[in-house]
Image (cartoon, protein in one colour):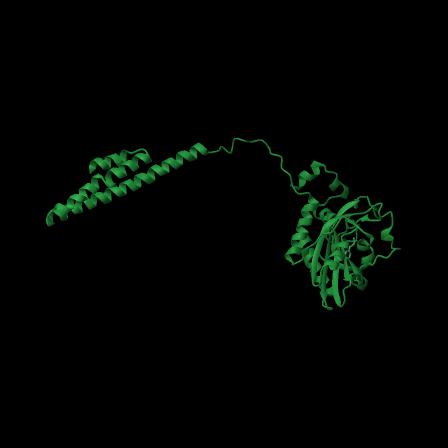
Length: 330
Ligand code: PHE
């Protein structure tokens, strides 16, 4: 059998090795035919011959196996070498895009509210008087409806001036409990350092049957949110007015730039105004036909958040499409 041991060790290809295996172990293989001789032998001879054959069989099959895995490994290594890519070769800078900072901040806000079980709602950018004003308790003579604040279309419809109409649409389309946010684009005739005619808001609305939803709920929810967004800040609720909430409040955080020293951004007040909110006005529930419910609502400007979080001095620069600005947000 030494002949086959040598042959196996010298073998260089898997196919050739398989041929050898058949030559030894196949039906007409050399070892198989030796085993066949056993049946004509006497007891003693048979015993010692069988032991010898078994030893050869074990040695040869082990050798075949190890040679086989050796050849397989070699073949794989060869294939890997052939298919290898030189990743150090291509060295030109590739132009990549990034999320616009306003969208990025909006995503962060949405992510937080989704984690707090708020559903995500949307509404049309072109609204009618009922959804944008009337149902929100903004009566006909309210100054927010004026030509200088609102973009009107020829058919009396308008570009929505806030995301609050999505509250109305949601309440008309479903029953309480409601726990929603509505992120989206809004439009106002406004243009200066801190205003652009197109900007983004995130609206929030929570409504439940009965009187379980209170200003206290609103307060603790918003405090959690603002600390999540701005870190360890103080949060202050200031009495204010919105037609669709009563009582209403504007919410300030302690200035994240001067931390109480007074600076230009907080206009030396040490506070930054970040959103509006309140308990939903009964007239709003009346407009959508809700009875015996309680709820709160809030609305925030995404650009305002982005400006504060990224220290953008002029809001308008966010919409000029200047790559040098956008490059900084990769
Ligand atoms: N819609 C208000 C605005 O655009 C914000 C707001 C929403 C205030 C909900 C209170 C409650 O200024």
